[in-house]
Length: 175
Image (cartoon, rainbow, N blue to C red; front, side):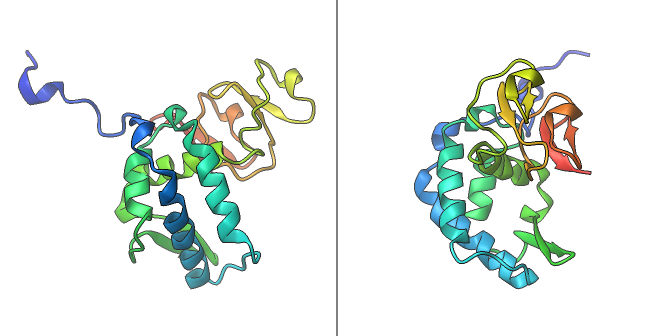
């Protein structure tokens, strides 16, 4: 069977060009998350929105490492929509109309901006990280107890405790 024409299209979940991510979008994305958390009854610290904005902006610089689809994630979460979040156990979980690649792409940007998930300390082995662990996909130390859903990974060991590596999306997910 010969593939021609439309059959040569790249997969939908291919990493996207991070230059399309606008740091200005981090403000409405953070607002959307806070609104989702409040709707789910999740208590947040008073400065949660500012922390989320800062984390988002830091993560954009490394978004090229992300699996999933960060651009679709930004498009989804920049404008509040009833299908952006689902509540489970009083916590908001990203939904984006069921688009896993968009949700993980957005969470990847946030994980890469979180020093507990991507410290900036270069590593090849866990021993390079002192108390932390080495993520082989990012080449950076991370905290095994942190919440890092979306963090790029190659293996389960690249993810914090309680998370596993979704090899199709190359991202840590809750287990």
